[in-house]
Image 1 (cartoon, rainbow, N blue to C red):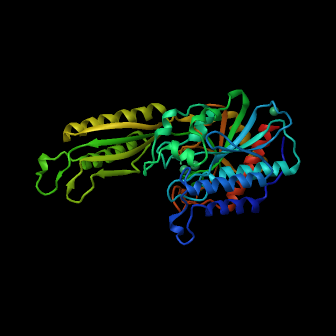
Image 2 (image 1 turned 135 degrees about the vertical axis):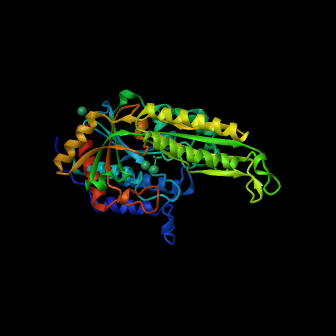
Image 3 (image 1 turned 180 degrees about the vertical axis):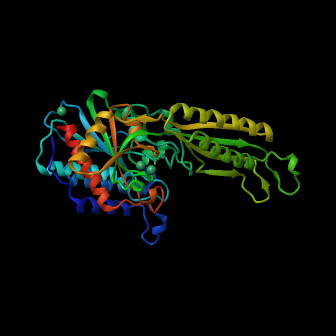
Length: 414
Ligand code: HGY
Ligand code: MN
Ligand code: MN
Ligand code: MN
C-alpha cells in the first residue's frame, strides 16, 4: 500500500525546537540540553510530550514505569499493534535530536496518518521510553526493558550522584516502583517496532546519503571498577612504597583504549574520580566507568575477558585490590529483514537514496527486538557529532526520515 499522506513539516520542526528548549539555558547555548531521567527538566519534557500527543489526537496513557504511550486505534482491536518510539531524556549537555526526533517524528507521522483519514487494521502506538540514556543512574533502557519483561527489581536500588535511589526518583515522578511489572507487553500483542533516530556517526554524511537502514546494532557493556589502594602522604611516601589507586585507574584507562583498538570495537571511560581527593594525598580509592561495545558478541566477550586480566595484573603490580560491577550488558543484535525491506520500499517510493549500515550507538531497539521484529531508520548527523551541544540534523533530513517512517508504519499497520 503506497500512501500519499504527507507530514506537516513546520509542525514537526516547531515541536522539536520547542522540546529542545526544555533543559537548555538560552544564555548558554554551549551547554546544550540536559534532561536527565526523571529530573525536573525531564518531568517538564514529559508533560510537554503528553500534551503534544493529546493535541495530536492520540489516546494517551503513562504506563507503570512512566513510558508515555500515544495510541491511534486501528480497525481491528485484536490485531497486534505496531510501535514507533524513542526517548526524550538526554545525556549531560546533549543535543536537540538524540531520541527527540524519534518520538516527535513518530507523533507527527501518526497524526498525519490520522488526519489523512487512512484507516488501518493495526493500531499504532507512539512510545516515549523512560530513561533510555542511563546517564543519571548508570544503566538505561528502563522503559523498554520493562516492556519486554527484563527490568530487574534491583535496578530500583541504584542511586544517582546525589544518592537519590531510582525508587525515590520514581516516587517523586508519581510512579510506584512496586508496579513496574505491569508495563510488560506480550509478544503476541505486538507486530513490529520501528525507531527513527539520528545516526550519531559519519557514514551517511561521508556518503552524502540522507537515510540509513540499520542492519545491526552494537551491544554496550557498562562496568564500574573500584580500585582500593592506600591513602598516604604525597611528600613523605617514597614512590616504591605506594599503593596508588589513582595510577591504577590511569593504567586501566589506557588498557581500555588498547583492547578496543585491538578488537576493532570501542571503549570509553566517561566517568572517574579518586578519593579522598586532595592535592597532597596519594589516592586511596578510584572509581571509573567503562563502556565497551562491539557488533560481534564473541569479540565483545573477549574484550571483557582481557579487561579482567588487566585488572588482575594491575592489582598484582601495585599491591591493591579491585571490585567490578556490571551495570549493563546488552548483546549486539540484527534488525528484522522484513522491516528493513519495508523501510527500503518506503525510500524507493519517496525516491530517497538510502544505504544499509551498522549502528554504533545503543537504542531501545536493542530491547524491543526481544519482543518483536525491529527496524531502525537513520538520518544524517552533521559531522557525526552527538552527545554534544553541537549535535545537529538538517531540517530537510528530519522531514525525510519522518516521511519514511510514516510510509513504513502504513505498510506495517495496513
Ligand atoms: O549510549 C548510547 O549509545 C545511547 O546514546 N544511549
Ligand atoms: Mn544518546
Ligand atoms: Mn538515543
Ligand atoms: Mn495486517
